Length: 179
Image 1 (cartoon, rainbow, N blue to C red):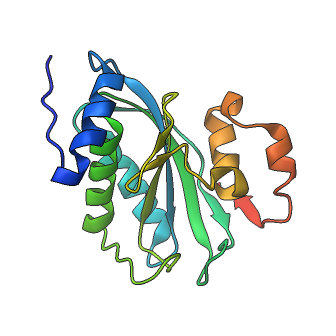
Image 2: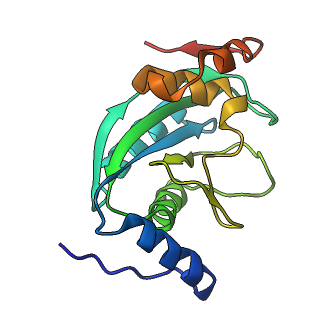
Image 3: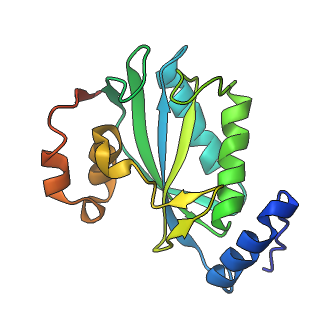
């Protein structure tokens, strides 16, 4: 199956071409997505977002972590509910990011200021072995190694992706696995 690539805006043209070359014949790529919310019914928002991700075209949900409750890190507001999912996707990284932002917007996500409380936050943590650094997207996610709410759920579904020493360095962050 041949999938046409359409950049979201002219700014994305160059990066989209680069990612399309990386994707080659569009074989599925394993990507990891971090999910978080701390407004409204955060647990329901994460479960709905997991389903919305699974329902995306050219996407297969492979694994999902448990839900975790964590204190906000470099942010204010109520505790977050967090999780990580593993997907196999034929979307390139920018297409996947765009789809994740559409899911956030449908959940009422607004961005009044950095690290504001949110109804839903979907972060592209890893996209295969790609290393992407642009104004639009950075993969691996630049702060994932500093956050227990990312590393613990990621370790649950892909322990080989997480350095145990990194986890030990985050023991001061309050996080609990939910049943």
